[in-house]
Each structure stands twice: as C-alpha cells, then as structure tokens.
Amino acid sequence: MSTLKIISFGPCITAGLPSQFTVPYSSSLSTILTSIKTLHPSISELPEIDGKDGSNKIKGEWCIAINSEYVYEECNVDSSAEIAIIPPISGG
Image (tube, rainbow, N blue to C red; front, side, top):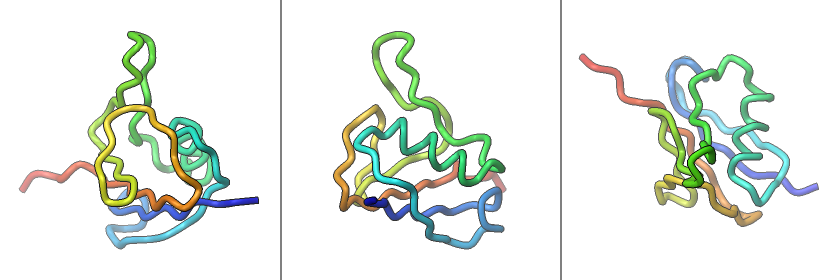
C-alpha cells in the first residue's frame, strides 16, 4: 500500500514542533484530510472541503500545501506528493 508523507506544525498537533507521519494514499484531498483526522483525533480544526455550494473550496483557517504550493480547493494528489498542514498564526 502506498502512503503519503505529511508534515504538520502547531501546538495542537505536536506542541509546536514539526512532525512527520504517513497516511494511506488516496488521490482525493478530502479523503486524505479524513485520514489525518482519524490518525490524530485531537486535530479538530483542520479545514473541511465544503462542496455544498458546488465550489469544493477548503473552509477553515488552516492552510494546506502540496509540494510547497498552497491549495484552496479539492484536488487530486499524486502518490509522491508531500503535504504540509499549517495552522493559523496566533496573535501576539
């Protein structure tokens, strides 16, 4: 089974330190996000892909980057992709 490497940042994931983990490969970004939430149930604020209005836009304050490019809507993900999950910047 193929897996994807995920890089995550933020206190709600790893006390603010970058971490890496893998999820089963899926070509659908929404399925990948569901897998991440299953592996890390403490991540409750990850963005959702909202297709109710037909736009499939990513909703939420977190950012998602695939191969160092920000993504804003549902997309297909190559099996060699690297995904970064980036939390919102806290004020201060």
